[in-house]
Length: 338
Ligand code: NAI
Image (cartoon, rainbow, N blue to C red; front, top):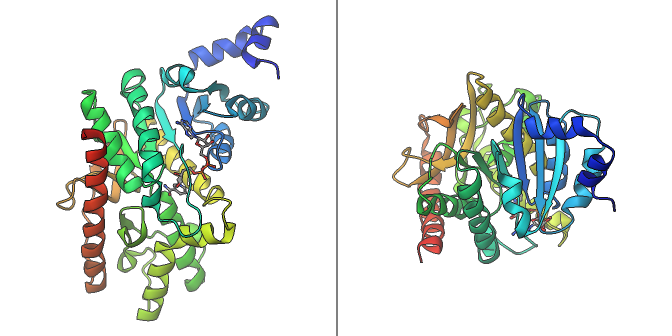
């Protein structure tokens, strides 16, 4: 296939290159793992985002194929592909936002923690390069187990002396998207009008929907609460089983990732009142990382909201979540420290 950059230069398509290099109006976004099940639709949706002026697509396979394909979309973002470790640093220089969906997904019967051995190393390598090339970028981490990969990223940045807890965010938006959908379904509401806070982390019992705080205010029977909590906590497994070995959630995840990335970009632009749940360095509980509602701004996480009043059911869920989370955080931290 033709090397797009060279073809453009041969033909003297200076303006496209100027636009790519300058890209002053709009944000520069890199996706690491852009050729994967999540990466591809995520790249497509980010190419459609008017806030993005330059989109860098990095992967260890097929990055140029995905780039060629997506670059034909007649939207304004300029797209560039980067293949393999030797092009990683070029992919990262100058980026405002880096989204990481690189790594292996689950197969039936696996927990997210079963992915640790492979994905921990991938996230560490990618974050080492971010620390070197764009330490001020906002980083959205999708690679599982998020409960451990976010602490891994934080440790890598600490080691490099560039850790800013406001800029490292674990993406738990899919849990919120699922919760909104499932609540809307049983209450007969439009999912776009529903807002369910989902706190804790992003795996099994650490996914804690706060159904007592749903907006618009809903009252659920205990049976509904049990059903919803179980379905929200196991929504990922529902997809893994339905795909029967072909991977985990990719399309709904790309949607959720773009919803979250767009919120980060709007906040970077200076929009007010951008509030979403995310898994971040936090003092909301005694744990060093926790997912809860955060207000995003020009520097990333500007404010972390407390959990608000919990009922007895949610308090019991919180204790279980914290117990599991503590282990996952420790595992991530020791992976980098050892
Ligand atoms: P996939 O296997 O389809 O794609 C992963 C991509 O990462 C592949 O293109 C692969 O070449 C690439 N990759 C592998 N090593 C890399 C490296 N060192 N540098 C750059 N790219 C590399 O997997 P899929 O379905 O896209 O899932 C990706 C990750 O997202 C998994 O860890 C999965 O568990 C996680 N996930 C997270 C969710 C969340 O809510 N946070 C939801 C769903 C999935």
